[in-house]
Image (cartoon, rainbow, N blue to C red):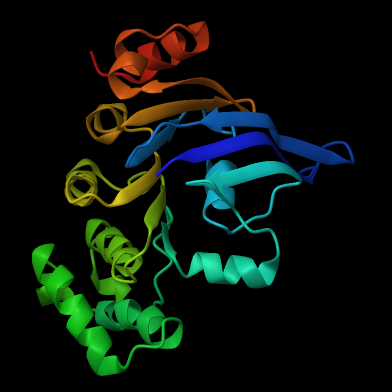
Length: 251
């Protein structure tokens, strides 16, 4: 994929307790990638990473600016955005699984009700991925009966089985303990190795270095640094990036 972003602006109403008006979350953001499979967004909390990811996934419309994947502009009208969202997968921090449905039914629902597959065809499509990622034995369980790592892997599978052009992941391991985090990171690594296109927000710097083709450092609503992964970590030029890596990289 090749991503081009120019002059991206996003504003939201000011938070409660703050002066009236709007808060600018993305402030003329610019980014131009090469031909890559995996883009990782890193940076301090509140810098605009998740807002940017939601726009790229077609979940929010920016106040100004343009976004294009592979030369095709991202739509802005809701009807066209609905069509775009059917072609991509999105994974959030909080799983967003339906609590009253089994893991299997959470996988089947978008295939049947959004993509129009029969239940039989949907079952056939999800069987292989469930087996591949060691989740077949848990398919009958509801989310409350799954570990955090299992829930997040089901959420990633739900995005994967619709056969998307690319998958967007927003801090998929932030709510997990170290063991469960490792399960999810291994799964994402397998998807990356299989050629799945990924755009990923993460604070896991070691993992970012391992899977990213390019890394963009987002802070104060702008991309302050952007480079291939090895260059980003080994030759950081921006002082904010050096300070950030000094705080987040394990010695």
